[in-house]
Amino acid sequence: MKNYVKPVVLTSDEVFEGVYAASGMNPDIPGGEENPGGDVPVVPTEPAEPVVTTDCWTVDAVSVQDWNGSHNVFEIRCGHNDSMQHISTNTEVTLTFDHEIVNAYSEFDCSFSGNTVTVNRALHANGYQSGDTMTYKVWVQAADEATTKAITCTFAGISCTHAVNVQGGFD
Image (cartoon, helix red, strand yellow):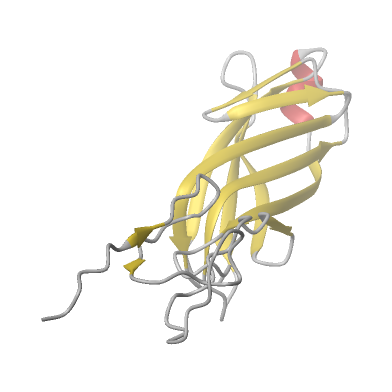
């Protein structure tokens, strides 16, 4: 008859996922004892930090309605680059205009200062692949009607926050 050896359960609030129960301990884990079988994996103690990049999306801002009664409406068109796949939790689009902005808003978190508008779009850890697109609108207003109608976007940039996947990597 074999003796029953109670499984050891390790928990950590800093680990992304995973459950492992086995008899014996791992000497690489603080407080562990020797494990001759060596079959208990080392559990990472700190999650990987998110990575922010600017090379996975392209962005363009196109005026689709130069006057809606108060604002010029720009459509933000984002396309995910070819041969790239990852999980994203946020994109930040920065738009620079040729005139100072006195008011701006979007469907997503939006702020403005001077001639720059920044839009943060939470992506809820969506997986994006090459060719994926996202489109949304930003409403901008300059000092007067004529300036608002004529305002143009002189720069559009985007950054992306990569999230760790279930295997602990980014892609």
